[in-house]
Amino acid sequence: GGVGAEEASDKIRAILLVLLPLASAFAPLLAVPAARTSPVRMAATVLPDGLALSRQILASDPSSSLSLSTYNVLMPNSVDGWWIYKYYQPEVPEEERAWPKRQALLKSKLLGPDGCSGSDAICIQEACADSFGEDFGFMADAGYAHLLHTKFRLRVATFWKTDRVELADEGSHKSLDRTLCAALRLKGRASPIYVANMHLTG
Image (cartoon, rainbow, N blue to C red; front, side):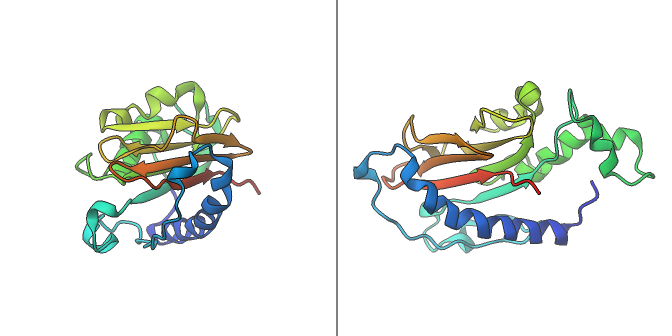
């Protein structure tokens, strides 16, 4: 694509600064039993793009930390997204703009070069509902479950590693206006972590 690592890092920091306070604001909208909603303070550490995840730098107690990544995948052009070619410079070969190449790059970006070092929770924006299962099947293969927004052509989706994270409750998620809110919980812990995934428009 045409976005550099430094610019991507700036965008991720900006998105997280919006997401973290909004997650608290949306918490009352999610149907989580009151017994599980004791407030828990968690410090958020924002890592620059390209830095490998390390639980030792995320928290003094690695078992209590949850890593989260957010990424605008730019509409997969497998069955839709015909305009994506315009995001590339003219000298970029046609095959580099096609979905198979983009999909491989996204897989490496989201899950790491080894395919198994992705964050505990991953938020993406601009997913295509018609081809979602095929576009992001590699996430299920890597052990992630997901929620997909129920409306819009460009949708948001939230993934979580099923070996460490679960939905706090079957009713603990809502599709709002361009926002997907979910209450996730580290397995073995009672308190939920509210994740608000949104795609803002200009």
